[in-house]
Image 1: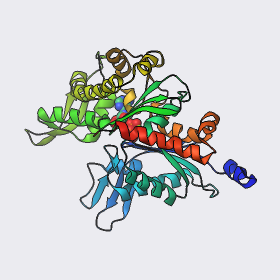
Image 2: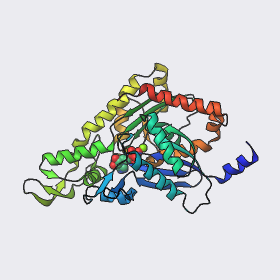
Image 3: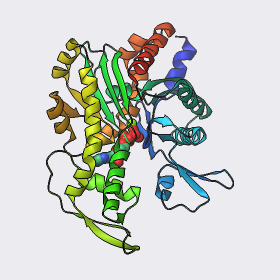
Image 4: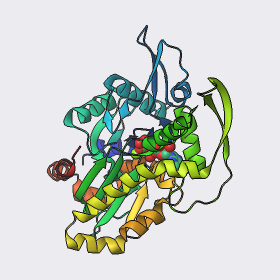
Length: 362
Ligand code: ADP
Ligand code: MG
């Protein structure tokens, strides 16, 4: 590295960007999580101007006037609205770097395992527009593993399951490479919808945000912890009038069952596809859970029980992906393996991409 190069790398921040379906998180190595906001953008359909992003936009979801459109630019693990996604990334990276001398950061963006080349390109463009000296992107599950503190250079295989809002990303990692990568289009949002549907079946309509609140406060898998029912406001469909009603823990738990079963089936089918030596490793190294879904009461013991693989929850599961993406740039062991040799760097990421392709099935 030249002198200029090394000065530049000391001064310019190393950022990790987690472009999640529910939350976008920006992390700086050495400084921590700088920004964490819902991946939501509200724009004015008359003037085509961005009205709000992040928390402010999420507040408007389900209660916006007709000329304001509230979108989630990343839905079901893919970028469904390019412009909104680019605005979201640009604004959040900007916010993270506010009040900073403008030295272009190095950045690792983490993307869902099923993202296509075009989607990667869109992320790249957005990151560039935000002023970053773009580095590269990694599958979310790989970043999650690093952020969860797993030693991804370990010879022994390890499994990571990142349960987000729109997708569940599963990876089995060997020596700094991916053995298996799968991306399921099921996550927290499906659980929210199931709760909403179940109440609707009982002629009571609630919004998505209320459904999410019920999940956070009363959700569980396995044995019910026995919490009090929650009073929520909604619309009584028979009386056609607003009303408050009590929702029990049992109702919420039952509604969540099917979605959780899909996640479990996804995990088991990845496990079934593994070579025997890799499976054997997992009995020792276990499954690590990250993402907001890791916080569902009882999920670790349920997965452990169903798969017979010891399952633990990573510390601070919601920020693992961003932290991991940022740390990849700075970890001496990872850099030792992947850089500064451009060739090997590229090849390593290519190997990740290939892993990603091979096991992705819609
Ligand atoms: P993404 O990576 O898709 O942006 P996150 O990892 O940020 O998703 O997780 C968001 C999801 O996790 C949402 O569906 C949210 O409702 C859910 N979630 C967050 N906290 C909890 C919790 N304590 N219990 C259950 N689900 C949670
Ligand atoms: Mg995520």
